[in-house]
Length: 246
Image (tube, rainbow, N blue to C red; front, side):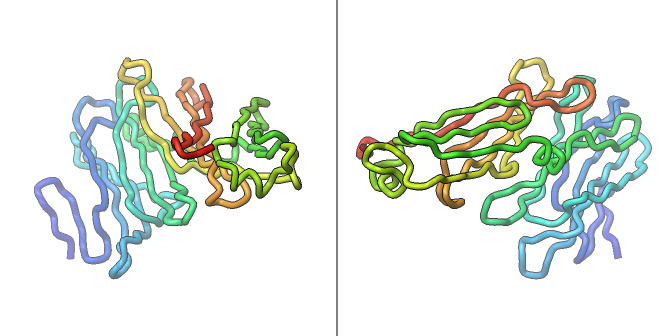
């Protein structure tokens, strides 16, 4: 019950190609066909059993790799060289569909037709932990526990009504408040150096008293060091105040 087209794609009513791209991913200088398949839920955009497939452009041999987090929305793939070997790697993104905007990300290398995962979003999320603490005088401290770095956010931009709920008139906290940093909600390939080798720019939301109490975003630049992606730089981006805010 498979319908083959001129590219060798296949699909049936349950198993569909949901994303695809062409590029040399095995290092033989011949473009390969890289695609994701999945099972679409009836009358829904939710996709299950998302699988990475690679068709060798030279031999036509297919490989498949089932993802650990293999269900979600809007699966996509991008082919970029992240490791500097002049061969494209495979970046896969899947939206979890939760209210926090959390995403699933994987990067694979397929040099010599050997599929190898070189980035796993769960491993990255678990590698770094953060402490978010409100402080006196309208400040929030965000600490990266592993790197022992900290950022101070001036939250006066949140406005008087917000600040009056949690601070005394003298600027002291009425009670201790702890926030948190979300898992990855964005991971974008950017060639910062303009040398054809792509770094990764990750986004993680920072929340205060509750999830809708957004304080900004943690931005992380990840670079390949020959063995793994490491955290090269980290910043915090905050929202600007409007002209009517005081």
